[in-house]
Length: 466
Image (cartoon, rainbow, N blue to C red; front, side, top):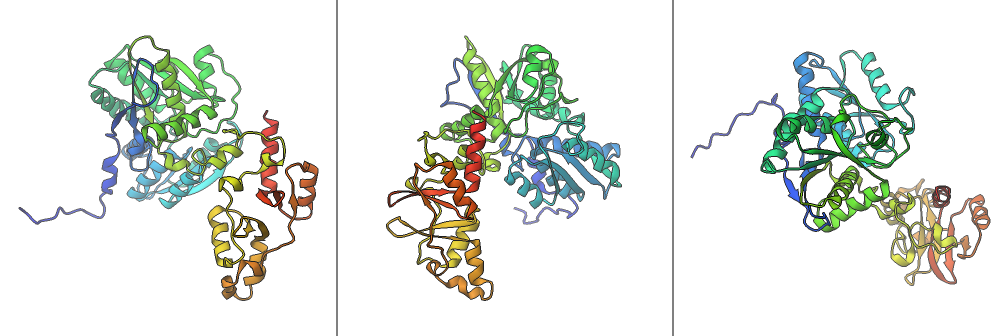
């Protein structure tokens, strides 16, 4: 047996790139799929956790071959996050600078991940359309024209995008399904998955149905159903749905379409985790929601494939966060018709982050940072509210002597509390805010929770949408 190690040049790309693609296929067994068999292509198993690793590698290598991207060049892309992650991994491995233009609705996990990979991030507005100077694709094209050696990837029109799926994803599914498949359910972000798979299966299995699952608010569902362009709405699902038809999206390949709203998408993604143990992202919920509807409509057995497009690790602060879901109105808490309805973190459910009077100021500071809040209620061992401590209280104590972080919370907290009963009015609440305080809601001696300005704003926004 030889002990000689294989020599690897430091100039070779990292071995992680060899793990792109060849993802497993998993059958859904604990969800209602009607008479059908439903399979999930686990694209969350790619190196950066999404299907976009495939197209990122293909587009960069195509640009290198045709000379659009030269050594020392800058990769520039408009992205909802996942294409950016793949591009950041590959650009970093190959020594390119990378700038990503990302709409501001994207999850912080994605943004933190691309930055950790070395990408420069420019956040822009997610509420503007093509032609606006802050529209993310227009910004990317402008930057590429201004930066010497800049290469605008343009996943929405880059032919290497669908080609990656035609030559890798499609053949993988065909072999994994033993050449026995009746339908594929996809979403459209850039259009590459739809067009690439559609082209592959048009040659290998012409009777296969390409089914679109589209977020409510996107124009693509209506286009399939009516061939009419409608005005786009808004949606919280990331990575799929559009306000235009991408150049790479061959919509003629679509046989039928389903429209899935955010509430259903998030609920299905959470159900997938609970029942099948698969942690998928928000677009996975949309695709799976459409696939389940398709399957349940069938009258005979069909073999259907859809995708776990990316990992749910990128959405732990959003759709897998119960507080975010409630604040955004995606799950409804039982209404009580009083100020209880404004509390986002409820004491009786153990949701309140608090400190005790005998905890240290350092403990209070750490809990504020962990929970991303600027104040904490101070609760006695019996659970009574005895004070409140905020960042100003901490700063007043420690700014001259950081050693005072060891002092007790009781020495810094405010014990003059602004308390309200659940039956108090919004006007009473505004009075508390006008005095620069946070409202503590109590029912007699029982502490119920805090109400902040943000809580009131979230409540009013949800009332507007009803």
